[in-house]
Image (cartoon, rainbow, N blue to C red; front, side, top):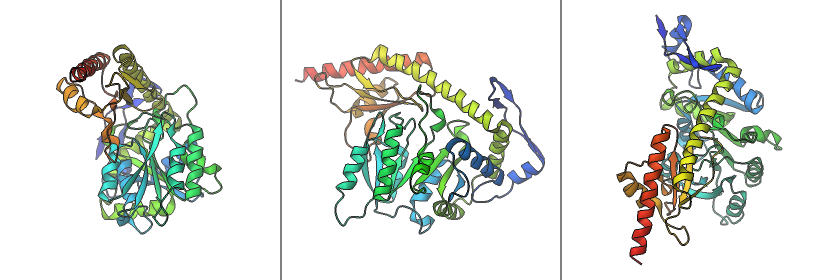
Length: 394
């Protein structure tokens, strides 16, 4: 048997495709069951990547496991069904940056967890907010065992945590004995002008004791969303728990998909892979610039925002009230803007406890320049009409 996939982009020449062939033993392996933790060759490649990018070497008490996307792995480490070593029991309090990735809200809700919102801004998690929560924790109540964060190009806020904030959060994790769930699908989509800050996974090597960071990477944003492959790196007991859960749920990540991805990554090598991710990041930087130009043209004085340094999202505040800028974006976005063909999400979708907010999340990954300009122009009309309607009822 012989299988040939679609052409793969050449990282050294983005305008040229490279044909990859999978046959013989590799194809035979891809058509069979495989190890729960992942294809051996792919795991070896990932170990090398984590050493190259994060300075993490084997023998430090950590290991790697492959999953069907990073969200699959995050859920498995949270649930007690995985093993007694799992992190979160039903009803436990958990710390989540706020606003938070909407995909994890139902995960924690399914476990009846109390989601404790930690404030964030354009520089990352506000360590002062985190410290205040922990130092004023009710006596006799179980303290949170985990903090969830997306530190680069956060979905939804687009923020990238600064080095100073990361170090402060790590110090608090040691002081108050919690683990950091570093969900990092946009690590390789950093396009800021300043050097990229190191990951929590790398920074914890500077701590007196490593092992407080459980890192989640994804290939969905840099290769293809449809491949559904992510990988977790962290303390071996937690990765063992993830594997035990996988063995009783979906058994393993598709071996065939892993073989395809490993063939591609092996053909590129680490240098080619990094070159490819830089090309992808440059693509998103251009998309960001197009979107921000439209915001400046149509929403100056009607919205406030910080320019993202990574990822594919803009988080902007609608100034719905001419006097103080306060307001709720829910009805504007879900009804009036949607009626005019503008697709975005109101900020309340990313707040675990559902409070009102004037913020909106917009993705700029797929939309062309003309569509962006037209969408923001229509949103301007909606905001102005809403202001007029409010004034007429005063």
